[in-house]
Image (cartoon, rainbow, N blue to C red):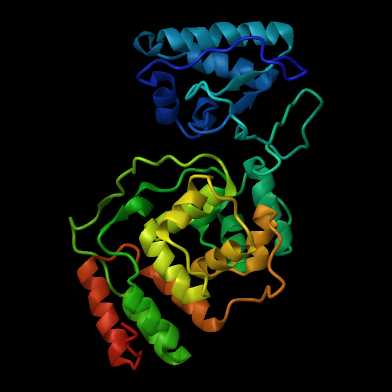
Length: 347
């Protein structure tokens, strides 16, 4: 790609996606580890030189034809003072860009190109939107203490913020009993409990751990990975809570009054249905965050009734988070406990 952002040369990964696999295995601090499997990744001239050095240091057996082609095109781009966009997963047009991981916080110079979709900007901007919404300064790359502070102010979880920032989520976060997740009955009972009893219910949930061997890595679905976009991003946040499309639809209806079919939830995740104010209300309640926070992140105008979530909604959203790594039997026991506390049974 030249400085006018015209593509002058294009090629794709091999059928085994060996280049992407090599990038995924790379150390977290390496430049090649920043290559996104979903979005376009751009390297400027200094970054290209570093990328070439990394690739040329690979063992000979890892220097596949694709790796050698990347090195060759990188050398050409440096000579032309151009750019090497990495989008080797698909030949279809790519509309979003994941940036490389900057090593400092200086503003970009003239020869750094940042390309972004108007509806799904690059991760640093997404995180800055959240920070601005809650009165924090933007920081990139974000450190652990900063993410903790941002999570506390937004009502989102640190793992949610890692998704926003396109940073790796720990593998343990994706261990579930996929037959479990927050049940409609448990959510309904929690919502109807007084604050003191909701806190007891959450404390009981936090005291429980799944027996060894009962959780497994989340299985990928035929419709995944989701494309870049805010709808898909919010669906990934729900997936962190062990909520399927159907589970999310039921919980969202109970917690927000936004009642949609599971297929509609899925259409938002696939990018087939755009986010609107009503859906934003539903996602905000389910995640336990103010609508204003999601509105700032996504750019979707909030509904006129934009209010902070009720305490019962916030507590129940926290309960949904706290039960994500429990088994179905454990969730059933919690539901019975909620009933014993006085939560009426709507089902």
